[in-house]
Image (cartoon, rainbow, N blue to C red):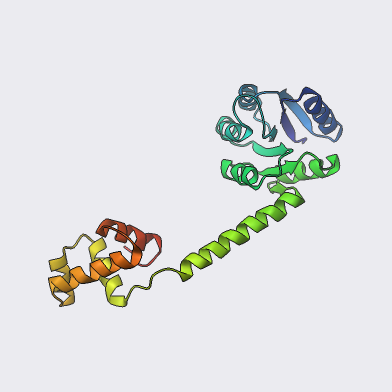
Length: 216
């Protein structure tokens, strides 16, 4: 069974040429659109396997169109085809749910191969963009490692107090449970807030849960 494709690009010459080339390569081109509104409407009507979409379009951006197409045709896999090699555009496309990001200066054979990969359930990113994506992921991991290394160290007692605060207990009740004075509990809470740079018990509890310091 041929893979059905909707081609979306506001440049008429490029769009019609790509559609013709895809047809010759064995794809079933079910439609062409030159703007966002037409793209969403055709995707809803035709439910294509793939939508090949330019990132820069009149009206809505290609990124906005991805979300609308996925809502109108949930089974369709969207592949961005763009002249942009911006890391920001790449990440935005990934966040929007696109299954591929291919640059327009690649060969048609590579494009056709990538589209077949996406149709079979894989993802596709042009090699240069894949390198940029790895650079971004590397920087993100380094940042997470740095953040973890700078995380203030809470004592066992402070974490224990936090756990009871998270359960909604008052300082007096916590003191009774831990056999310490109410003032000592308040001092522990104050130390936690100072270490974390926070301003309230609720902020401290949310931080602790987010950082997996305590489990409720």
